[in-house]
Image 1 (cartoon, rainbow, N blue to C red):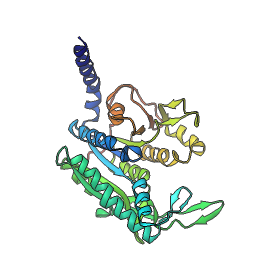
Image 2 (cartoon, rainbow, N blue to C red):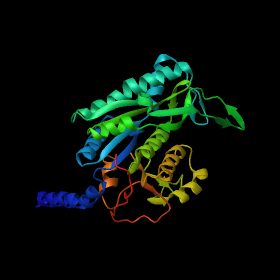
Image 3 (cartoon, one colour):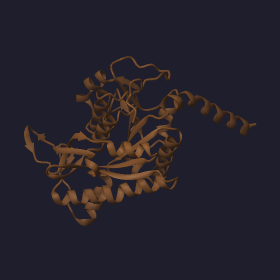
Length: 308
């Protein structure tokens, strides 16, 4: 009897997913991958399975990743000291060489390998490829004085043609967050890069995986999770947010201001968090939408989205 109930529960879950499968079929979903979900072996494998599930379910997933912990570990092994200013790693030419090597040569290949264990899907790229991401030197101020961050960039242009081509071929692009510039190669924030790419692709969703359940209304008590808020409400909250949440929520704001219908911050430590958010009625995490009231039922929120 117990096994029968389990089978019925599984069937009910699949039926609940049906309207969402219908609405999101053929839509592009940009996923920013980072945090503990990237370093825990079991979560890494589960992430790859989730991405492949999205592909088989008819969505068009794109992965954008950073790799801060891996970069720090490699710098430590080489005896290179990292310094930070305004919450960002000061990136000298020597450090940039290591950042590029770790992101493009190690982290990117690991993600591609995990996904491709399930089929010939993932193709690794960096922001340098085909002028995918162009950046300019990022300015920063600390205590009222300008600080030179070195080769740290702000995204100023996205040329997503190569990503569209791969998506049209049924592939899963996996993109490391380094960018070209007139001054060489720059390190860019992966949250910002994912948002810019989501806008450039006309994506249906941006999903940012992090190490918290979402945005809390009562931080640091963290007992009142905000499940949904508008771009205007988020903009008003930004000055009060913790430093770790600012780039993630700014990325969500940038995405919805740029025409992406929904942006989500999810706990990447929760297995299958992406599937729970996309394919269930309740969802999890925090969703950011534009100013207009967003329906809770799966109506076609993608009307007007450009075909890719």
